[in-house]
Image 1 (cartoon, rainbow over the protein chains, first blue to last red):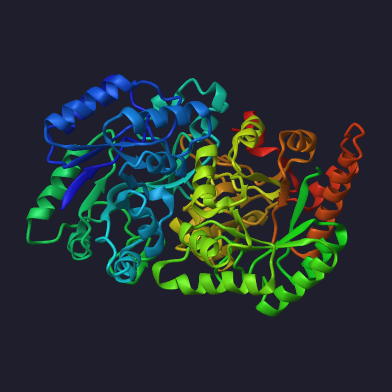
Image 2 (image 1 turned 90 degrees about the horizontal axis):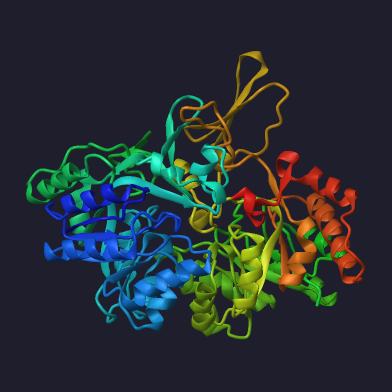
Length: 296
Length: 333
C-alpha cells in the first residue's frame, strides 16, 4: 500500500509551502499531489516554484501528481490548467470535467479526483477506457460502495483501476462561487485582499451549541472534524485499496504519515486518533462508527 | 427567439397548473430515488407520466424527465429502467447528470434529447464539450456559480444550448458537489435525491418563546419569537467562529433573476428554469404566471420594465420571503 499526500487545501505563504515540501521529501510518503486546487487568486507559488518542488520530490523517489483546480470558471483558469496538461510532464489529477476533456483530448493518463462523482462500475469503466489510471473514491462513499464497484466491474475488462481513499484529514464537503473566508471578513471575493493567508488551517465554524461543524477555506467547505481510517487499515487492504490519502495540515502532518507508515507495518490495527469515519461505514460522514451504530 | 420557460411539477396537479399558466416545458421526476426531489408523496408513476406527456403534447408543450441522481453499482438497473420508462412515455428530453446514465441513454435512446443536469457540475466550455462529444448532449443546465458576465461568455463558447436557473431555492454550492447533507444525515442530493431530509429535522421549543431547529445532531439555528424561520438547510444556518452567530454561508433567501431577463436573453440563454418540484400547485401557478407575463412582455420588443407586482408576487412565494440575484451578481460572490 502507498501513502499519498493530498494537495495543501489552504493558502500558505510561499516560504511555508516550500519548507513544507522540503520536509515532505524526507517523509515516508510515496505519492505527493501538488498544486492549487481551491482558488486561482492564490498566487504565492508560481509555476516555476511548483516545478522546483516537483523536482525535489521526484529526486527523493516520490511519484508527483499535479492536481487541477476544483472549480474552473474563468478562461485564464482553463489556460493555466491546459498548460499543466500539455507541458507539465506530470501525471494529472483531474478535479473537474474540463480537465478530463483536456487530458482525454491529449491521450494522457490521469487520476480521477474525488469530486468527479464516480459512483458506479460503469462510470469507472467508461473513464478507464478514456485514460483514467487511478481514481480517488468519492468522500461520501465507503467500504460497501467500493465492494460493490469491485463486484460489478466488468469481467474481461482491464483490471480494476488503482484505488485511492482519503484516510486522514478534514473531509472536503462542498464548493461554491462564493468565497466564505472573504465573507467572514465582510469582504467580497473581488476585494478579498487574500485574507485566507491569515488562516493556515481555515476558519472553523461552531454551531450555536458550540459544536464544531465545518471549516471555511475560500470557496471550499471542509469538515471541522478530522477523518481517520487508521483503525480500518485491514479492511482497506482487503478491498485492495493501494493508495491511502492524507490531507496536509499546517502542523503535525509528518507525524500522521509516520503513524500510518507504522500502522502498515504493524500486526495490530491502529487506535483511533481522529474524529470521524462515518462515510466509510455508510453513515453520516461526521459520525464515528465502529460497527453499524453511529455515535456523533 | 424567445427563451423557453421550464417549470417544475412534483404532481399531476402542479403539472396542470404549469401547463395552464403557460410553461413551455415542464420537468418532472419519477416516484423513486432517480431524481433530486425524491420526497415522499411527490412525483410521477409511469401512468401519470404518460398522461402528463399526452396533455403537454396536445398543447404543443414539452416534458423533460429529470433522472439526475447518481446510481451506486448495485442500483444501476433502476436508473436504466427509469430512462426506458421516460422513453416509453414519449418525454421530449432526459435531464441526466451521471456519465454511465448519459452513455446508456445515448446508446439505447439516441432519438431522445439529452440535457446535462445542473447536478453534472459543468461550468466551462471544455467541460460541456466533454459531455457533448461523449454523449451528444444538446443542452446543459448551469450550476448556480457563474456570474452573469461568465454566463454571457459561456453562451458564446459553449457547444450546446444553455439553460440557467431563473427562480427558486438557491443552492449556493456547486450542484452535484455538495456533501453537507450527507455529512450530517447520511443522505445526499447526489445519492438519495434529498437535501436536509425532513425525517431528520427537529424543531424544539425554548424558554422565552424561542425555537431552535436541528438536522440530525447539528443545531442549524435559533429563532426569536417574532423571527421568520424557513425550511432548515445546513447552508442557511447561523454559526460562529470568534464572531457572533452569523449566516456564514448564506441567508435564507431565494434566487430571483427577473431583473436580469433582458441580459439573459441577449446572452443567448435558451431556457430559464424555475426550481421547485417539491412545491405545490399554488407556487407553480404564481411563479409560472409571473414569468410567462415577463417573457411575453420581453418578446414584444418594447423596453422591458419590471412590474412591481411581479416582484411582490414572487417574493411572496420565495423561501425566506427574500430574494437575491445570487452568484449572477458578482458582488454576491
